[in-house]
Image (cartoon, rainbow, N blue to C red; front, side):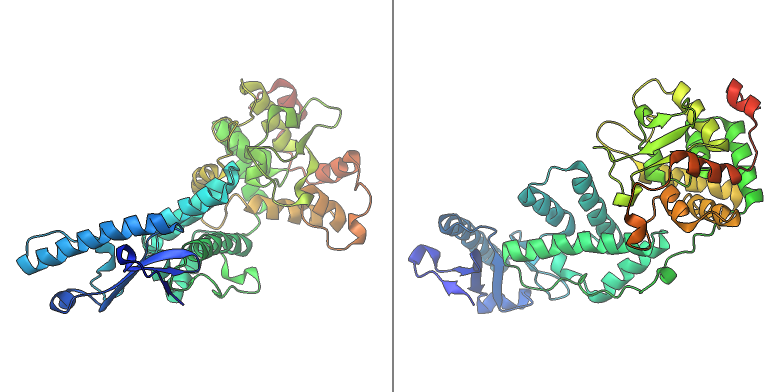
Length: 396
C-alpha cells in the first residue's frame, strides 16, 4: 500500500516498502497518448529528499512534454513508460538488473561476477534486453529449451535459471517493483532426458582422435589428448597450472584442486588422476612447451579460466573428426565405459572421474591409492602411443 507524503513540493511522491515512487494522473487532454490514465514508476531511491528532487525534475519534464503534445513539437521524457503494446514498465532492463545485483551484493568474486553477467547476457540475447518484469512464463520456457539446444545438461540449465531468478528477485525486492519473476517455477524435467545425449566415444573413433591430436601437435589438441585418457572435465584440464602436473613422478599424475581462477564442481572433484597413454604424452608435450605458469595459457590466466571458449572451439573441431554425435564431455563417458569394460570397481571409477560417491560408506577413508588407480587406468590404455614416443617426446 502506498503512503503519500503530504507536502506541497512532494504532491506526486509516494512510498512503498521504503522505495519512493512518482504517481500522477495523466491530464484528460493528453490521455489518448498513454496506455493508462495513471503514471506510477519508481524514482529508484529510498531517500525522501532525493525523491522530492527527482519528482520535481520529472514534473517539469512532463509538463513540458504535455505542452509539446498540445503543440505537437516536443520529445517525450520517460519514454520507456509509453509503449506501443499498452503496457507500462518501471523495471530495469536485464543487463542493468545484473549490474544492480552485482553492485549492491558487493561480491567481487570474479567467477560469481562473470557467471551472473554471462547468464544475463543469455537472456538478453534470446529474449531481448527488456525490463525484467516484462518477460513471460512462455518466454522463460523458450529460454529453457534454448539452453538445452546449446548442449547444456540439466544441472547446468538449473544453475543458469537459479542465477537469473536471483538477479530478478533481488531487483524486484530492492526497488519495490510491480510484477512477477517469469523464471520462477519454470518446469524442469526430473531427469536429463531433455538435454542432448552425450554419447561415449567408441574406441575406434577415440584412437582416430588421439592420432589426429599427435599429428596436429598444438596446444588445443594437447588439451583434447590430455582429457581423452583421464576423463577430466574440460574446465579442470584447461585450468591446470604446471604445479598441478607431475609427469616425471614414478607414477605420473595430475592433481586437480581449486584455484582462484577456476573453481571445481564438487568436493569429490578434488583428486589425483594418473597419466597414461595419450594423456601422459600430452601432459609432457604441454609442460615442455609452456613458458609460463599455466599449462594452457590460451585458455587460462591469473584471473580466469575460459573453458567456455575452449569448449566452443574444441567441439567444433571434434565434429570434423568424429562426427556430430560427440562433444568434449563425451570423453568422460568414454573413460567411464572403458573402466567398466575391464571390470573396475565402481568406487574406483567414481574416484578417477571425481563423481559423487553413491553411498555414505564410500565417503569414509582417504580412498584408493594412486598406484591402485594407475593399474586400472593402464588396463584401459588404447596403446596409441608407445614408450619410445613418450621417452622422445616425438609422437611420430
